[in-house]
Amino acid sequence: MTRGWRWLPVTAVVILLDQLSKAWMGRHFSFDESVAVLPVLNITLRFNSGAAFSVLADASGWQRWLFTGLAIAVAAIIVVWLYRLDGRKQWLLALSLALILAGALGNLIDRLVLGHVIDFIDVHWKDVHFPAFNVADSAITVGAILLLLDTWVAGRHRSG
Image (tube, rainbow, N blue to C red; front, side, top):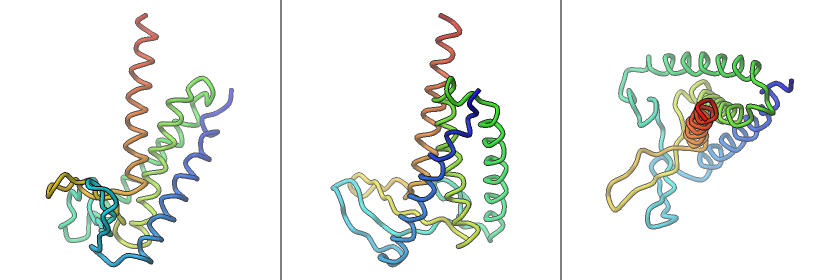
């Protein structure tokens, strides 16, 4: 059996892209500086000390360690889960977990090094802005969608 760990290079590439994009933003943009890319997309440097959608961003600092601990726990669970998977037969599940792991670790690096997460993808419609996000957040989102798809496909195979 080929373990799910065969998908860890995907994790490494996504973490690298995430960290390179955040470093580039930090060197070329000032906080809250924004450049319009499309009518519905800006590149805007933001810092997020909270979780997704800036939940708890205004807390006094304890949230940094809460989210750090959660990221470490999730990463450990995913690594064990990947070890137990057949990386060939369960490729969609393994890929989804590799992407979620990459996102968790990409944002964990920011929290440990900077004390906050760098976000810069600003999607909006007119004056209504979706919370800014980054490559790591995108990997988590795509990984979660693939995880749901894998669950749906596996359910269909069991029932039919």
